[in-house]
Length: 73
Image (cartoon, rainbow, N blue to C red; front, side):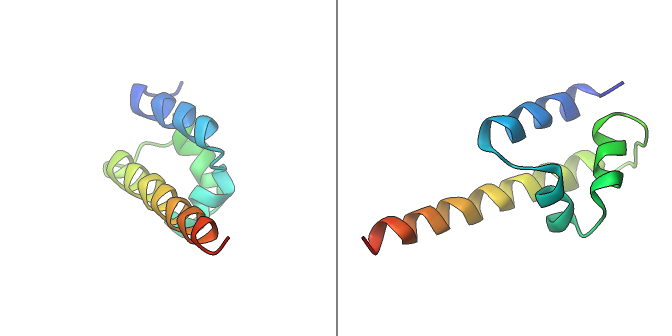
């Protein structure tokens, strides 16, 4: 069963269109491993910190890309 932090992260991923595949790429692991952690089948001690940081990095990258796209129009 997902933990509170992973359920919150899954919801934020959905809202922002961030896929497990993208999160896995940012974390440098497989999408299957990301799914195991987000679904509560694995619980490494640093998972919450690493996953939140990766999610935030993906959001920042997207915002920067969106900002550059808008400034060139």
